[in-house]
Image (cartoon, rainbow, N blue to C red; front, side, top):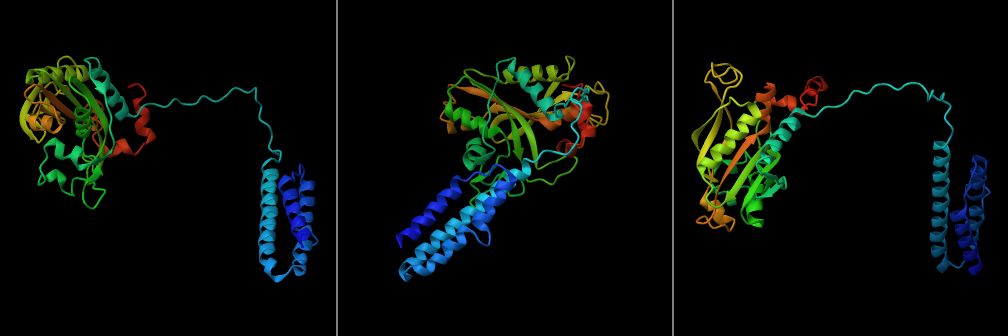
Length: 343
């Protein structure tokens, strides 16, 4: 009885080590182990010689043996089929190649890299954070009360039923992470993608890009903020550009302001871009609210700072005058190839 089992195990090992090297040898493998008069057929027939209590064990062994033979055959068959020599004509390898057109950077990448480069000259370092955020870093630590409109489902993509996790609505959440993990002086910019639950149109999109900045140290003033933003505006848009601040409100800064630049397209004479006003809004800014510093375990009596933020799409529209936000996400080669000289 044990001889029957031993024979089956020997055949199983033969199958495992078998390695036909030609199509003909593979066919012989099939006939030997899977044909109508195969070794397996004889082994299956031997089951009748076993007592009833051993037949189940032997049957399982034979099923395993058959599966191994079929798997080995199929693997070798595929290998031989894919390794067949090609009947296609071999090309002339000495012929000159074709010129491949060079790719270009996306307009949003061009502008984002330019913003980063400008701020890096005056000591700002890049910092990044997760795009999936919790309520503390995205809202609460930024002094956003529970009843603030930004917490409403119409603005935020919440990921959990308790609204504790969401796709970040701004890169300000990275500011909190830096203030929690490091001690001043802090001088960072935070480029990244953000999400808001808005209807997609020429002027709005559910995903877009921001570059925010943060400077925390001793005796940082609003004058430091104004000079920093003037430097950026003139480096980005030209030395003749001027800036102005309009009072505004953000939960995490006090005082807060919207920042405008003088329209460099019409030289403040009035045009479609500036809506005949001579000024174009490019972002928001303000002094970091003392409550935000306290949330991050920083002493507001010792430290002060400013923060700012701008949309990369907005700056790109001003630089390249592409006024439909949807075009930046469609990857239409007819649009993208126009920026080869802008790199």
